[in-house]
Length: 396
Image 1: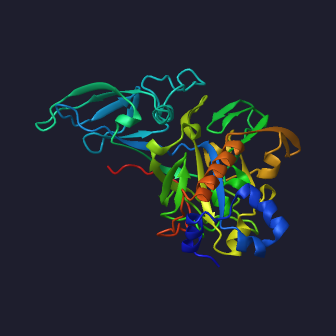
Image 2 (image 1 turned 30 degrees about the vertical axis):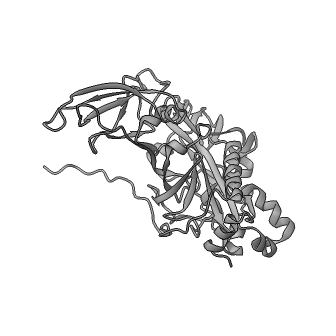
Image 3 (image 1 turned 120 degrees about the vertical axis):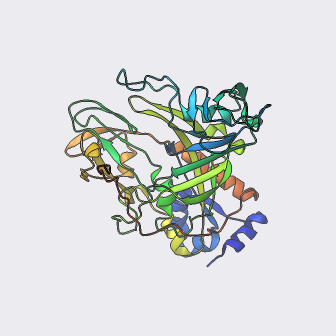
C-alpha cells in the first residue's frame, strides 16, 4: 500500500518510477504484479481526439468607455455573452456566422469555435466584434478590435464532457452514405470508424474510478488541469465484462485548465464534413499505484476491451438501443476487421500516436518533479444511468 503523500514525496525527490499505460503491460509481465506494485509509483494514461463538449471562458477587461457586452463574435463565431459584462464563453462546436452548414449538403464546415480556440492557443490574433444595448454605467454600444490570448485577463478552458470511458463503433447499414461526428460512413457497411485510445485511455485504466475523481490533477493539452466534476452524460451503470471494463460509453470527465499554459500541438480545430465543427484535444491523466489491484487494472489490453457496433444508418438516429455486436480494440487497430461475415476497412477519429506522446510528456513532467498528484476531493458517481429527453406537449 502507498499513499498520495508518499508518491508525491518520491516525485519531489526525483525518485518516482513512472511508466505509461503502454509500457506497464510488458513491465508487469516481466516482473510480476507484486514486484511491479512495489516499484512503480505512477502510470500515465492519455487520449487524443475530437471532444465536442469543450469550450473556453474568456475575459477581455473593460474598454474606455465601459461596455456591457450582450452579443459578441470572435472571428465571426458567436460567443455566449449571458454572463458578466466582459466575460464570454466560446463553444467548440459553434459555427462561423453565415456558414451555409448543410444547406448545400454535405456542408464543409470550414471554421468554428474549435478553430478559434486553436488560433488563440497558437498565439495568433483574432477579431472581437461586440454589441450592447447600452446602460448608464456601460454606455458603449459597439466595439471592434483584435486581440491575442496574452491580451486576455483569463482564458480558461472549461469542458463539460471529455474522455469518454468507451465509445461506439460506427457502421452504416443503409444504402446511402451517412455523414456523422465519427466521419463519413459508406453504404452497406463499406467502412467502420471508432474514436478511443483503447488500452491507453484514462478511464479504461481506472474502470471503477478508484483514483480519478473530482479534484484529480490532469494534463490538459500541456497545462496542469483539474477534474472539476463528473462529465455530462456520465453513466457508469452499464454492462461490464469480467474485468470490470464497460462495454459501452459509461464514464466521462469535466475538465478545466489555463489555456495560456497549453501547447498548440495538442489543440486542433476539426471540420467534419456533413456534420459540423469540433475540437480535438490531447489529455493525459496520472494513476497513482496505491496498491496492486489498481496497478492490475492499468495492465488492461486492447484485446480485453470491446466497443459496441452501432448502425448509424438508422438505429443510432432512432435511439432504439440496438447493438449489432462488439469488436475489440485489438481488432479495430488493424486496417480491416471481420464483422457480420464481411471484411470491413477500419479508420480511427483518434490518434494513438498523439495520445502516447501526451502520456510520455506527462511521464517526463512527473519524473522531473514538475507535476504532483492530487487526491480527489470527491469520488465520481459509480451508479448512475443516462436519461433521454422526454417529449411533452406544452401546457396550454
